[in-house]
Image 1: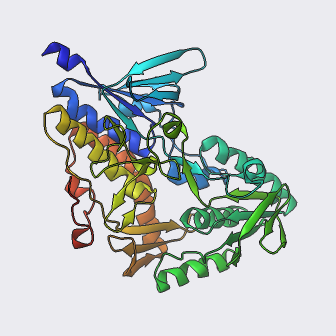
Image 2 (image 1 turned 90 degrees about the vertical axis):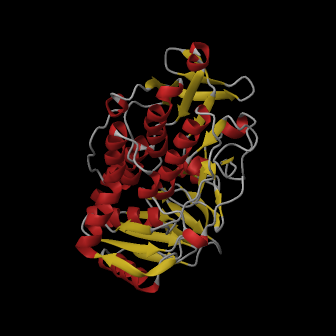
Length: 400
C-alpha cells in the first residue's frame, strides 16, 4: 500500500486561474489516496488575467503570491518554466534561472493557457503590444503614458470582449489619446441587440472611434495597414484578436488542434496520452454546441472537473464526462460602466442584460471570484453543481 500511495505524483503546469484551482482541489481529493501535487509556474505572483487592461492603464493590483494562496493545501510549488514533456516516460523538465530539474508524474494537468496570436498578420509579432501577462501590460502602460503626453493615437486590433474592455479602459484613463477600435466584426457582435446598443453608446461617450467591417493586414511601427491598402496612423497597436496555446504540447508529441490546444476526450483527458488532463484555454473541449472558447467562465469548471476526475481515478473509479453551459458575457466599459449579457448554454444571447452601476458591481464580483473560490476550496470541496450549469437539453452528456 505504501508504494502505491507514494507513486501517485500529480504535476500541474501553469498557475493561472485554472491551474491554481486544479492544484488546490485535487490536493484535497487525492490526499487520502496517495496523491501528492506539485504546481509549476514561471512566476511566484498570481496573475489576474481578467485585469490586464487595468495594469495597461497604470492601475495597481493586489500582489497575490502563489505560495501564500497555496498555504495549507500541501501542494508543492516549483518556480520555473516547463520546457519539455516526455509523455512516454511521464516526465516534465522544468528550467529555472539556476537549475534544471526533471519532475516525474503519474497524472499531468496541462494548464498553460494561451496568448494573443501575433502570427496572424505580418508585423504584429514585432510591433504590436499584447495583454498576455503583467510584464506586457506594464510595457503598454509606459507607452500609453508617453502617447498621452503627446496627444497621440492607439489602435486596438479586435473588437471582441478583450478589445472592447481595453479600448474603453484606455479612452477613459487617457482622454488625450485618440483610441481607434478596428475589427472585422462590430463590437459586441455576440450580444443581443439592446446590450450591443448600450455598448456602442459607451464607446461613443468615451470617444472611441470604431472601424468595423475592415481587416488589418499589416502592423507597422507607426500605423496599421488595412485590406485595400489604407493606413491608419497609430503610435502604438494593441493586438487582442485570435489566441494560440503554448507550443509545448505540440512540441512534445501530444495531439493538438490548429491552435495548439490539447485535444481531449469527454473526460478532459488527452486523446493521445490519457495520463494527461488539459484544462482552460489550453484544451480543445468539445460540447454538443461546439468547442469552448477560452474564458475564465468555462476554464474554472474544467479545473474542477479535472481535479475530481483524478480523484475518481485514484479511488479506482472511471472519470465522468464534462458538461458545461455558458451563463453570461460580462464586459467592463472603463471603471464606471459595464454591460452584462446573459446567455443560453451555447453562448447565444438571452433577452436579459444588465447595465450601469449594477453591471459594474456584477463584473467586479466576477473578476474577484477566483480568489474567493480558492479560499473556499481550501476549506472544503465546493459542489460542482453549484459552480456552473451543465447546459441541460442543449448539451446532453456524451458517451464515454
